[in-house]
Length: 314
Image (cartoon, rainbow, N blue to C red; front, side, top):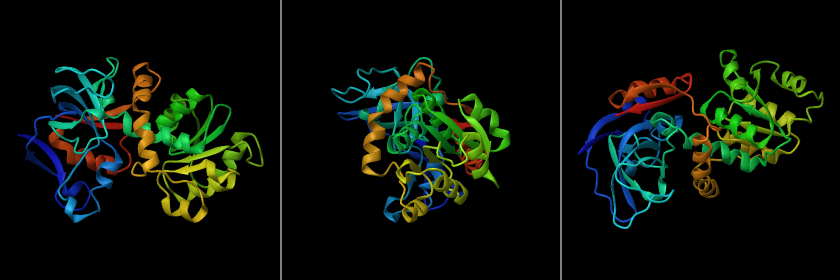
């Protein structure tokens, strides 16, 4: 037996319960992991708020890092090899807020020695989302890119991945997060009244033509309106939050449940792990919580001001 967090009914952090569950022995193509850290993402409790009642109770959490406890027969992890005692990370999994879990070996990768468990457990959801936004927008070296919500988890990953491409990045964030944007390679700009004018001035072109791409991580009307005003080619405006506005205005909205996005995100996991292992993709962890205190951690995450990534430690 082990314990994990579930949502027995639809709702946010207030409905979560820490309950006992069985961990099945790994079959062929499966791995049992002793979890050392579980990543936390806004999607964790977003996806417990509604859905098919037949899916209840919903296990919570999509990414973990830990140690291989057991492997199924003739099983190799996604990065190759794999043995009991190896340190690994896994994404995307179902129910990562747990002490132990059995998962598909295809979702398990060797953890770089340079990454701590809390960092490794928070790497891939944000990083694959950012990589997907870059893919869809066709952002490349020489582009000037506007990132809305640049100090959030996906925004910070975007700043770093775009910097590696050679793009210039202007990132919106609150004043208290200005240093975060700068630290990860962006040019900070405050959101709020007059944002379009300030971006035009910073970009150095009164017509706004030097903003080639806009990547929206927040979904506000301001982010969408400014993006539409500044980017001539709407196919290069990409959101992960403003799905209704995207449908109305005719620009892409991407999500991990979309077949093309899921396939792409899965395909880039190893590349992103390698970047993180080399120190080129940093995961800033603000705070850790004991696994038993996941509800309090989720409340902080839902507040929208965690100050960085959060991790749960069994």
